[in-house]
Structures are given as C-alpha cells and as structure tokens.
Length: 375
Image (tube, rainbow, N blue to C red):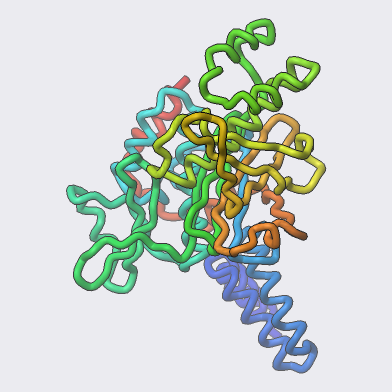
C-alpha cells in the first residue's frame, strides 16, 4: 500500500474514532467476525464490553450507572471551561452556574450538568438537551425527532421530559438519575430499574473543630430519632461519632431526595438502622441498612422493606449513599451479589476531544473572565 494512502487512512480512522468511538469499535469488531477470526459469542461479549468501557458503566448491567468526578483536581483551562459551558447548551443554566461566588461551587455545578448530559446520552443516545422554560427560545433546539429535554422541577431538581405530538410535557420514566456534590466530589447515580432514586455524598469532616462537636449535636438533636442518637454516641471517639452522624445524615438525604415532595414529616421520624460497620474504601458497598417510619407517638414504626440503600466510600473521607425504591416484591434478592462500585471519571471523559474545535462559535468570553475572578 502506498505510504501516503496508508497515512491518510490512518488519519481518517483517528478522526472517526474521536467522532464516533462506539461506532468505530463495533465496525472493526464486526469486520473481524466476518473474516472468521471471531466467534459469534465472542463478538457479542466484546461489543458489550466495548460499550460499557466507552460509556463509563459501573458494572456489567448498563442500566445502572455510578459515577464520581473529583472536581478539586480539575484546574480548568480557558478552553476547557468555555467548551464545558458551551456543552450546557442553555443561557439560563450557564448564568445559573456563573452566579456562584466560589470557583469550587461553580465547578461542582458545571460538572454536575455534564454528568447529567453524559448519563442521558448513555440511556437515550445523543439527543440535544437544554433547560427548557416557556420564556426560553432555546427550547427550539429540540427538533421533531428529538423530543427529550431537560427541565427543572418546581424545587429546582433536573428532570428529563418527553414532549408528545400535542406538546404535552411528560416525565420520562425509562430511567431515573440524581446528582450530589460535597467536599472534593460530584457524584451521579442512574438506574433503569426504579421509579425513585436519590444520592448524597458527604465529606467526613467538621469545620467547627472537634471540641465543638457536642454543641453541634445538640443543635441537630431534633433531626434524629432516639435510636439513631444511641447509635451515634456508642462510638468511643469523636471521629467515630462524626462518621456515624455523617452516615445517618447521608442516608436521610438520599431517601428524602428519592421521595421528593412525598416527605411531609420531620427527619426525626425517618429512623435508620445500620447493622454493619462503616464501609471502608477498599470494601464492597453495604446494602443492609433499613429505614423505619415512626408514628406520631414514637411507640410504633413501619419498616419500608421495599427500599434498598447502597453505602460506599469513594475515598477515605467521602461517604456516599444511594436510595432506591425496589420494583421487586422481595428487595432482599436484589441485595445479593451486587457490587455497585463507583467509576471515577475525569473532565476528559465528560468533554470528548472533538468538542474542543470551533470555539470561536462560542462568543461569550465573559464566562471565563468571571470564573477567573471567583474566590
């Protein structure tokens, strides 16, 4: 083969791989299969693995995503920040991100939006997503074939909406997603096997100083049940008590976020029982915590057995809880042999290489200037 032709073909393959990575991999695998060098079973296995690897799947079930991004490690360049802001595809949402005073919070908000975009593309393909409102002309970005858009609920929660032929906005229920951020991380959980899903991440730290921890507990006294306070205070060290407090608070937050507006009673009436020790970063996720809803007199309680709570530590200081309403009548079966490890993503995973081109089309340099001026 002529060397120039080979060089051009190699350049084309590299461009195609950057632009359509999954299509490129699957095409190459199929050609190997046609040549007789690959069995049908091996072909299917390799195609599934390729999809999982490229899309950032957390385990072999592509209907379940657990992603985490360390935003503290990301020191954005001008190109990265403007490209990421352009990918938001909505002036209202970009301005929402831009209003944060601190760089840390702006990075959390932007990465959270990119995680949602990547999640939606994983489940429904490369749709054109935008934050829709009746006063936002950018809703016209969605064409007749792409009727899936991102809105925000009355409480500000990002939700995926399907628009039918009559213009009705219907919540898209094929999968659920939720994000959270705290400390150094922004995390996302997504699941196609539930109608209710919530996630919460918390950094195990107390900025007020350990000598003030008991005062802080007294302030938070009404947010926990008596049994929960017993569990917290059973630890022999301040750090242990703080870690148990964080664990329970994260479980409550994930449950409340999953329920949404359905929670109409005080947090102290949501009482968690944690039979196992705190999970460590090197260990598999915990699934044995249960939630009880206490009645008004606190003398009786109802165990919500159809809820599953995943507990993980993504590093020695960050605790994550995922609350999921089981569609199975026996939720215990779903807790067996499950290991939903969080996949660590970088900003490169959220911004494909080909997105860095044509930056001149994004004219608002002020977003980068404003970010540089943040604390």
